[in-house]
Image (tube, rainbow, N blue to C red; front, side, top):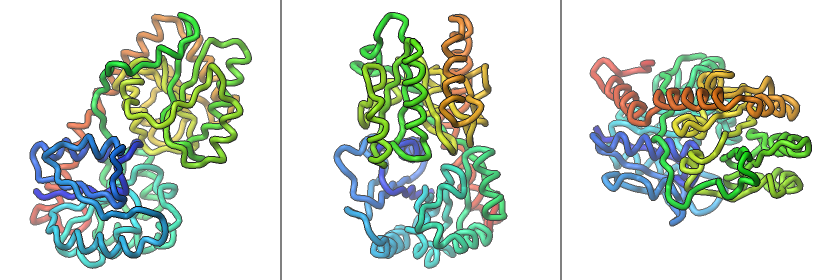
Amino acid sequence: MKILQMHKSLGTGGIEAMVCGLSNALAQTQDVTVCTIVQPSPDDKFYRELDPAIRRETIGRTGEGKPFKEMLRIARFIRKGHFDIVQLHGFFYYFVLAILLCHRKTCFCYTVHSNALKENNPWDLRILSFKRFCFRKGWVHPITISPASQQSFTELYGCGSRMIPNGVIRPRVAEGSSLDEYRMTPGTRVFLHASRISPEKNQLVLCQAFDSLIREGADVVLVIAGPIHHHDIFDQMKVLFSDRIHYIGTRSDIPSLLCTADGMCLASFYEGLPVILLEAMAAGCIPVCTPVGGILDVVRDGENGILASGTSEEEYVMAMKRYLALPDTARKEMQSACLRTGEQYDIQATGQKYLSYYTELLAPAGKGCRI
């Protein structure tokens, strides 16, 4: 089977990690090409981690602006490639021309990595009616990543989707990669938040919650990692940085850092099925999260993590206090439950589910939209 996986880039981030892991899993038995829209950088973590057997291509975009030139290049590339499956990950508008020209001969799949409405950027919103038409007519086969994501998709587009949860590689501790340097005392609890600095991630409230805990005397440290997508939010966060709230920039060793953290923090307003959450589970790192999106499909409050009652500062502070009040035995039991949950989201199992779906779509009876 000749498979093309396409995403805007393979730098850092949850979707990028998923595209890389999925491509590597599929490449064990299939002919896989990965194509980025943006010209890769030498620092692109997940581009570097692609299996050597994978063919690497790029459309070569180097700046921002109107995407029309790239749309034409993508259509030409897909038509010349004669791929059996073209798997798209976000940025639907880039592929409009390719879908129009190639849908009769090429099977397109599209993974919705978040809430179906909120994953649409301004360009996607302009073509939402066409996007809905493609899903309903079977020109593009939608894949959602959690029950919450699937429900939001049905509500927005009025048709079904195949649900395939994300998967991750079990994290390992890498030499020289640790959060232990941030411990102020032997009893300090160090928490990691790893995500792009962006409005939906609610990082200002996260920092405010930790600042409140620290002022009350809690022996905690928050370490924040990720690229800065919104500098205005980061500027507000910086006011709260201290010897107990740190920003360490974009890191390529997040799974390893999770292995040495006491907990993983997400205070998001909405989510799909966060890869960082699955990596935390696989590392036995207890998540403290807001109750949104696919998080609710993974975290069982008080069993394998802590769920806040909402997304406000006060609600997140209360969730953190519940974590900090856990006896050592209860914390260890929760860590073990995290590991058991993480085993359910192995990237090899995810890859097999994608491959089974592709096979179904390419079968003689598989023409048309099958979910």
